Image (cartoon, rainbow, N blue to C red; front, side):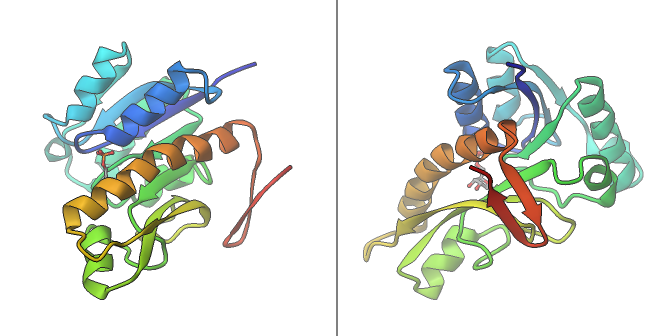
Length: 203
Ligand code: GRF
């Protein structure tokens, strides 16, 4: 069986990247991480990639005069590496149409809240501040609006009375590391069908 080639975009520590690499290496998912790209020179995600013999690139946003040109450079790397699925894993930039058009319905993101609740960069803190009793994480397809694309999979996490942002984020992260590989596996098996806002999982 042919493995789906994944390109991961990450800005930071890359624990979700690690969970994807591990799932690929353990053959839990029929995929391989072909390339990792970061907009941050010191992203630990790049080191994780190198440790596993995966190509790792820092694409410096400051070298380009627009977001579109920066993204074009990223698209070139993804295409050179024959990437079929792009996974955002803590990538802290809003995507432009450049990459979204080239990889339509083939870009996923993971968000640390149950979308459409608490989009944005502080999903765990916002949930805690709001006082919800259940939050969690969401894997969704990416559209130009932030955290707004069709939802592929979600996992719930109970908020505890004595939770801090850190303890809650830690339990959500445990679920993220299980959920993202599962969503990728569904994609790799060709089981995801997008109809409008709905993602149906074929039997
Ligand atoms: C995760 O909480 C993810 O949901 C969010 O950014 C964080 C990335 O963490 N989009 P890591 O770099 O994968 O450890």
